[in-house]
Amino acid sequence: MAWNEPGGGKDPWGSGSGKGGNPPDLDAALKDIGDKFGKIFGGGSGGGGGIGGVAIIGLLAIVLVVWALLGFYQVDAKEKALVLRLGKFHEIIGDGLHWNPPLVDIVTRVRVTEERQYQTRGQMLTEDENIVELPLTVHYNIKSVKDFVLNVKAPEHSLRHATDSALRHVVGSSGLDEVVSTGREQLSIDVKERLQTYLDSYGTGIKVVKVNILEAKPPSAVKAAYDDVIKAREDRERVINEAQAYANGIVPEARGRAKRVLEEAKGYQARVVADAEGETERFDKLLHEYQKAPVVTRQRLYLDTMQSVMENSSKILVDVEGGNNMLYLPLDKIMQQQTSSVSGSSQMKSLTSADVNLITEAVIERIRNQSSNSQRRESR
View 1: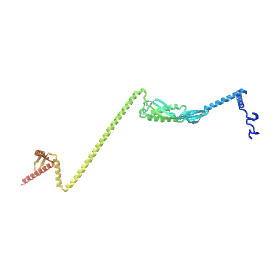
View 2: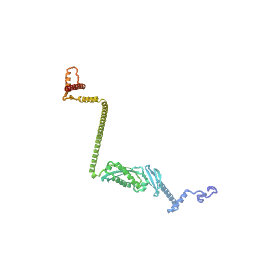
View 3: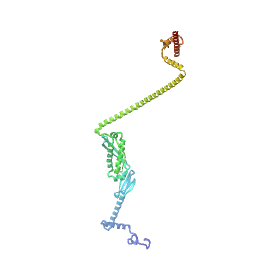
View 4: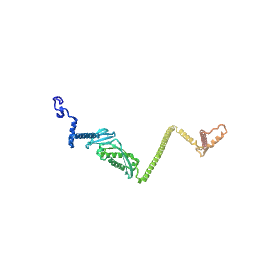
């Protein structure tokens, strides 16, 4: 049977607490608790003790509420929070509203997406023993909140030392020209890689985004000498560029002339070979004709040769066979007489090579006849 039914069991509030088995009053219960606390803290059991107990309970409730409210916190979107519970790593929390018990959990919020900068400047020695002053800026962020907070006591202090070490190592392995002008971009890449290697070995949780190496400058004590070196280097580059431009203009022209000479030589070679082949073919044909009629061919060759010789000559000497006389034919005088004889006429006829040939043949024939007549007379 239920305790609240007639004839039921015992009242859970106690059978002697009220009249007719009813539950005790709430004020009486609070007064009883206040009396107990009053005895603990040295208070009496009177009416004043009840009031003091209520105040203590209220104070404890307020403390509990404040303690609970202090456990709420907000994590920004750019942050992550690391939670230590009783001094031991518990978890990493993302953005949003969170609650952790105060004094039990310690929450450390770290901006992980924010790009931070560290700038440094120092004088260092290059590989070719030149002193250079080099400014540098390191851009970095946090890639591991746990390593950044727990592994290293001062990670950013370690970043400064690692940067100086990496920069001096890379610059000490490079020449002045690479540091100052030509190899500055590669220098930044090498410093970034070496710096990241150092930070990973330390377990700092830092990620190097980029390293910017600004314009390197010499120390003020050697600036004048350094300016002279820079000017000499610029003059050297200028002279090299001028020589290259001159070579770019001369070399193609020389190559063109050489090609033209080669083409002319090839053309001359082809012409000479063609002429030689033609002369050979003509000689073969002439030989064939000569073998058929040697006398006629020989006479024809002689006449052709004499014709080619006499065409450009104004005087002819004829050797008479069987005699000691030389016949002189002044063809230039004959041509002048022929020209003067017809100068008065309306139509002037010029003496051609064919006319000269006819005259020459007639003279030669006459000389032969005279020579044969003289020989007959002598034989008689």
